[in-house]
Image (cartoon, rainbow, N blue to C red):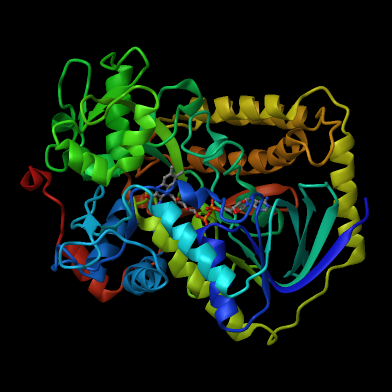
Length: 576
Ligand SMILES: Cc1cc2nc3c(=O)[nH]c(=O)nc-3n(C[C@H](O)[C@H](O)[C@H](O)COP(=O)(O)OP(=O)(O)OC[C@H]3O[C@@H](n4cnc5c(N)ncnc54)[C@H](O)[C@@H]3O)c2cc1C
């Protein structure tokens, strides 16, 4: 099949909230760019986001302000966040929300017309703006419409397999068209990675199948960019357990935000033991571990779940605020206005990822940018619900602005024919591979390994064992049985395997290194937080593979530190 060559000034890999917002900024500033994704236009993971998007608008709680939003974010992140990123996020969030509203996003409103806000876990005030429980879909609809109005070109069903760099600078990327399989090379002056997270590495996850396979992190790492905070994987407390094909899918935090309570099978509201002040609205890691402990201690249901109940609230209120949840459970004969839902922890979000300078969104490789869930720094050791949608639009705008202001001022190498030929030859060899192991088999084994060895509770033996098994998997993955057309799901999975193995190794290595428990990283052999571990772990690519190094995060600015010192905290009981 002949190679297609495409030239654009800015290539944006990924068309969720992050990629689209970047493209809108560029288009508004008159810069030619191309956005692409593995799926049709409008079909990115962002559409699954449900409960809301954070900004300190103070619609219901006027005491809220950006510095408290920043303080809550740092507190939840156990002060491993990049303070510059947090401050930029919190300061800029209100403008991004008002902008989305101007572009037609139909936020839920209060009786006097202000943008309504709900409680979300571990936030001091009602700060989460929402569109029922379909906030991500509404965000995507708004951004897709805006990008189309600005005539931003979109290339669908395009899988990027490698980035190409030259003399330490981004030169473009190589991939294939999933509709007919032909290889495509993109020549660009700047490349933006906005290709999402990695939680499909886990057996039970809230991700869409075959999405969130760690492509972004592995693409960047293979191009020479360090990954950081990879040990921090957020396990959401409330994933579905049935039906089997939906196990792990999310029961949105909005259920707890609107008053949902957790019970074990003995009828005990067990959060009273784990977090008597914040109860079900404590940080996700705290609630997830509480659920896991109850299940492990035999107080879970036959499906290894605890019970989430919101039926004490008025049925019409539940239908209005949680329409998607009502619908999804009704499809399986469960009326959540009358009965509880079975829930258990599920892998949900990647706090770790690509290292960037948040003031520009650029990685250490010149001309290579990263935005959205694929980056590390905003969330530190754990993420506040509602902070990732806002991250996509805040830093999409930052990336677009910086690229527009600097494009053409630095040398930009063109794609070398030899490099493209090598990448295409590798794709050909993979499609023809005649080994013994099916890509789906490797993926399943990897997901089991990650769930068991780098899951919600970890220890040294388990992690070492996990790394050993990963080496075996790597050996088996070098002996893949593909023999498939490049339009096939089998070939796509063979590509996913490459990314998944790299990204998984950085999680295991980071988790083994961090001999303490902090945020989402819980070690049974090092159960306490250790102040000397207030350091970020970086996985740095080397000629031999990777090496680990450490970096201390900076200090918050004076207004943020002041808000931290004020020790704001939601007292759950005043809600009841
Ligand atoms: C069930 C669920 C509910 C959530 N609810 C909330 C919420 O209420 N509030 C909140 O703030 N956050 C929420 N989140 C998190 C939030 O949705 C995500 O973090 C955010 O949408 C990520 O956006 P993104 O643009 O970075 O990536 P994505 O939306 O994941 O987009 C990634 C893009 O990259 C493309 N891509 C990936 N790999 C490749 C490749 N190799 N080649 C080409 N293209 C590629 C994909 O096709 C896609 O277009 C939720 C997440 C889940 C799973």
